[in-house]
Image (cartoon, rainbow, N blue to C red):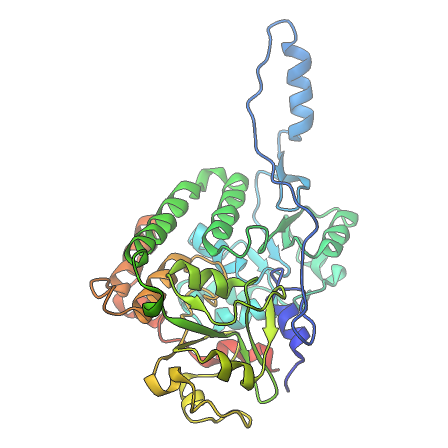
Length: 402
């Protein structure tokens, strides 16, 4: 049933989450340069030739050129109706909320589908469940099966250039999306995803809205925790993957470090420098002795599994987090919230209030969630729907055990 940690991390690192070995080995992208657009000054004497040159560089009247996160110049159609997402697991949910519809999504990875089936995403956009998953295992692509989906564009991980070459050779526009180009900063990563998507769909540009909201939340939280003493800062352990044979967490080069820094807490495993997830032992956890444990939705464990020592032969009973009752399952909104995604700013609110309930006593996370989706995306959630984000079902992690 259980897959090796290397496959787990490869699945997760979709993403980049591509590159873990038995010790959750590194996944790194080749040096990427971000391209910025610049306005061109055209002299009257050279106007005709420059207009021709500009037209050639921007594509035909039906297409235009975008620069993806790997620095590739890709010619894409203006009219995009069919989208496949190969190995960036959160992206189908981001696209669905961006469009307030999943009609354009014709293909996505099995791990994306498992999250959709067990989250609010499929309740809001039931058509997402019609997407095909057989063209990819989450790390590789069957190009023949992908072609059958007749996609106008395919999004793939910037750390997986082999997929990009397959798409290029097949004449399918492929857009590389990065998850670690911005040092695992979830807000900056989401901002850059939305910026690129908005460039491809300018009539639905949400770049500024998403960026402004997310950064206001971040600044608000940072201001409240700025004067906290070192003794008062929570000591967090992220239980990224958990089974009877494996415990994996976030060191300094994974999303857990950013989440901890964002709320003024300490990542107890920050001494670990391996990129992506790190496999650790109970002995290490005893030494770190975290006072708070956060369980991601990349595994099926619940707080009760730690309180009752129900998985494997691990004994958590002497850890401060267990003694204090401070073990929590992270939210599952449109996707697993440990990674960047549309739920990033509300996950930040949830995390801050969960870890520091007195400091953020005035924050109503459900109310903030309803406001965020409405004001930024025009998506109206009921109170029940908003609350469901913070009571995830464990089945979302099942793909990592099948």
